[in-house]
Length: 105
Image (tube, rainbow, N blue to C red; front, side, top):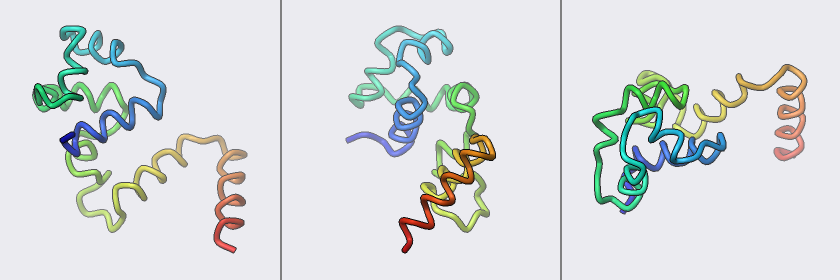
């Protein structure tokens, strides 16, 4: 079974188009390391949580808890949506708002 922390790492990696090799190189670890994390053979990613969070542009707390801020009233997926929304240009933000309004009708 995949650990929730690694699942968040893997999801962000896929969503942002990062390859396993890029993270392995960034961390200076063996090329098989990411695959070992995915298969549950190793959980050494916890030893690299600070570097992984830096690479992914999120906080270590987000990777561990799924929340951007421990005191946040939002769920992990809501906070992920907010984080992604903030990365958009104002024009794309308006498009997302319009799309959300249509979905809610």
